[in-house]
Length: 254
Image (cartoon, rainbow, N blue to C red; front, side, top):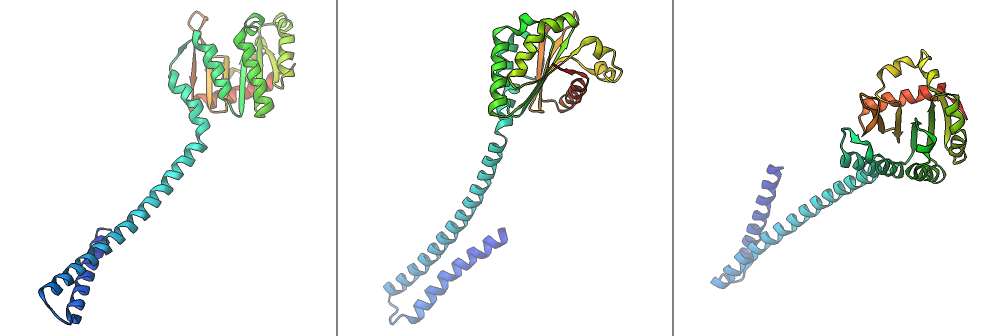
């Protein structure tokens, strides 16, 4: 490119010189004024040619830059959904978050969810009746009906009594269009196919959002729920996606 630019500059200069020489030869008189006008004409020719080529080059460069910017903007538009939900991750960090922040962040994540939401539920009826859980159910209802999202819930229950207490709640989830299943905790623990997952799982209470993000409610050393994580760690998401498939396969329809 530098060699091409040098050649163009030489060509422009020679063009001006050539025009000056031609006019000088053809001039009927060669007075001082005529000679000065010929020189000025040659210089103006060189300047105009330079302006023309520079403008052409700049226009071409501008079009190339415009095309590149359009490509970047299109890429950003294509990825806007990812940026949207990723902002939740960036805003709250990848480390453990106090459980007190869970309701607002969970509702924020649900609202931003586009395609799928696969979750387990380990809660009592009183907890599920809390305002943020009811609002979350309304959001999932909208996502299923408007976005055609694939929303699944697996209730992990302690025993048959727990099942009886939550039976109507599970049916209420199902009538909203959610795919609802349940499994008893001892059925998970006694299933040898589940052991590899249970040995490695950090938490049983988790949600997978759009197959890209995971929300984990993690018990502390005393088995109290005091913190949770929301992350896009690929290995962790892939692990829990497979874990969820296994849970869904051993669970029963309501």
